[in-house]
Length: 76
Image (tube, rainbow, N blue to C red; front, top):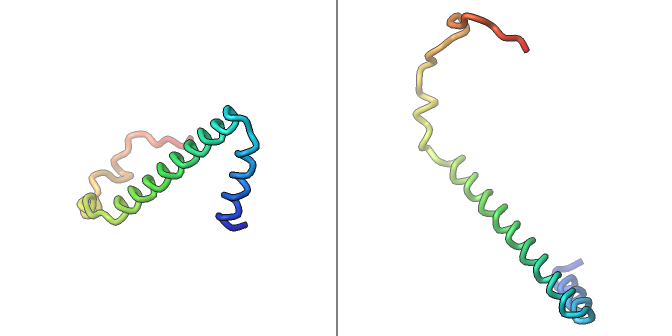
């Protein structure tokens, strides 16, 4: 199904509904759109963070502790 076909079919159904039911569909469409926007924003932020070099200094740090520093080993 194409996007245009889905839009036309949905409009046909909405036009047959009472106003309060059409408003419910509008509210649901707003909800779905906002959720989509948030997902896209989240993906964009993940891309920015993954490409960032802000935390590269952590990769260059020496290991401070080793297994020999442990006083008690937990195997849980």
